[in-house]
Image (cartoon, rainbow, N blue to C red; front, side):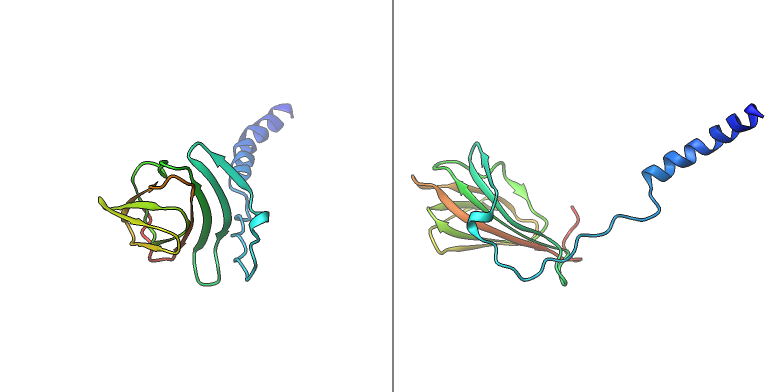
Length: 149
């Protein structure tokens, strides 16, 4: 009798492990973002060596796979990181300071109120070209047409 129980245990154990890793109910996608006001004082401040970041929103909407917005404060002379390729289009709105943007190797500099549009797959890097903090908004979306790289 014990050997039957042991055999059943050995046979069923892998199934239980498989079910624990692949539950019968797939995870639910996040609820779409809804109309809202995102108050400055409610954003969590993330301190980084090159400045600060405040995440505003990041999630699907009724018509987009993803809508994202964050606000970066970049220290004087600091850059946003190494040049990188973004699969999605991006919009960057300069609130304060002077921003130098490398777009596919071409440099553009702009101040408060200026807007950068970055096409899909552009290679970009941003640098604070001034002697005061630069603050800018980053907005991007992803759709089914956004490259998956």
